Image (cartoon, rainbow, N blue to C red):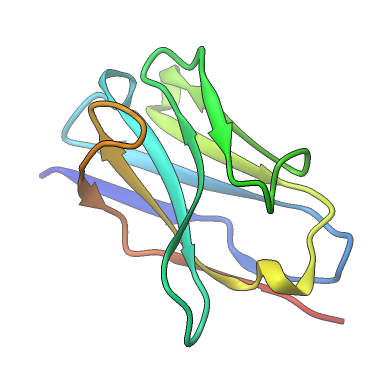
Length: 119
């Protein structure tokens, strides 16, 4: 069964770090670009980061550039989002999704993981 499962969310203080995981099953994650998105209450979903199928290219929203890093671990069929220097405005449900190419149509999505940044 084709699936994307996010994990690693939680409650963290401002300035702290979290690492989100996006594990794939039923397909090879390396064959796809993987995007990270987030949605805060009352706000539209926004793209946060994307990593190309080769892992050679990443792009980030201006709001997270320099703080978030996407990476791949092929052996575990997993993509990560390392989030540092977290701010309260990073609070949201975070989703990963697959696409043939960053910025194109994302056809499968995970269920999301909650990230809360608060003191």
